[in-house]
Length: 195
Image (spheres, rainbow, N blue to C red):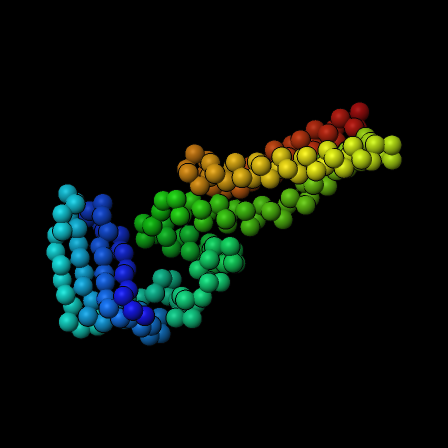
């Protein structure tokens, strides 16, 4: 790797420490920076110190990854990570103080990975009372209402996701809120048809 930059959270200042190196390579579970330069920023925003390291600087890869996992998109992209890996990544970021919008997005993605499979069940809860109400006579109207409700569901997913990402709503609640609202609506339709 050439022209590497690594940003490390600082415990003594609101700014991050910057590590730069002209070249680096991965050795097992470490990234090795060659002739690294460490720049620290004081709490008032001024440069505190610049240290040029003459030897190699070895840093452990996050979560003890090996080079193949660290560079693989399936291990780093939140949408392709499995739920176990994404959960570990969220815990690691919280433990190391890497929060913010990126953490909220990861939590929202994890919640969505659990919530989306239930969307099919919720679609059935909504479709059953519509099918009973309109039957063969209003087949077209039932299909149109189902499509409209599907669009409403996905609009709620987008809206709740936006609130979850910007911190206005807990990311896990944001992932589940469309399912909760639509299930409540479907339950209400079923109860109404039972009467």
